[in-house]
Image 1 (cartoon, rainbow, N blue to C red):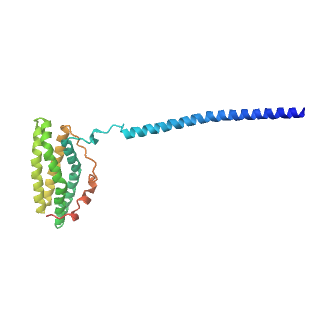
Image 2 (tube, rainbow, N blue to C red):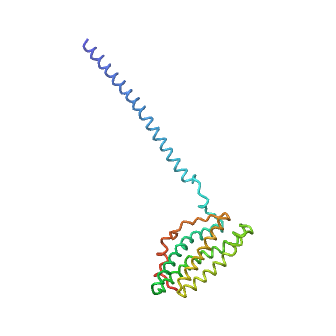
Image 3 (cartoon, rainbow, N blue to C red):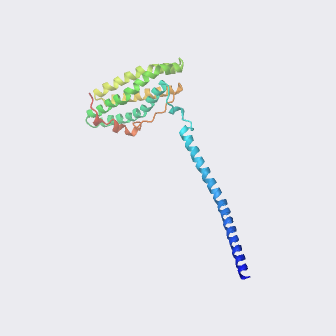
Length: 223
């Protein structure tokens, strides 16, 4: 009798243990399922984002295209030079102010002369290259005539600036630099009317605060 009761108790305990283990497994599965599901969903989103990034799903701005027109590339080069030229006007104005009280320093003239070679000459070339197509786009208007005349106007201004540098005439340099700056800004304004993008391109030398360093008078000598 005692043996039968003992065996019955063991069987009941064993059944209870199995039932508890099964219920625990079910609960664990119920808890684990949403966690695993959430993890799979997050992983899927990451994979989708990566695929979209590789495929370039985000549209590139038009200005970032690899196939800009020749005129657009030329306009953008001038737009990149323009802030440097405007900054240089202030530099020359400071030299002209100091010369009213101090002796002339030929290195100041060399500074302006070399800046003209490094920045103004290339910008002037781009203006000459772009002007015919832009004048045509402006359609026989007063703006078109102005665009057509800008290349020769800039050429004369650059020649006048060179002469002023060789003559050590800071006042003349300032006057001519202002005229060049105005011509460049007129070009960009007209280019904008001709539906060109006149924003500057990314350029490590585009920061105007770097002009005194990049074109420092101590690095150059007038020839």
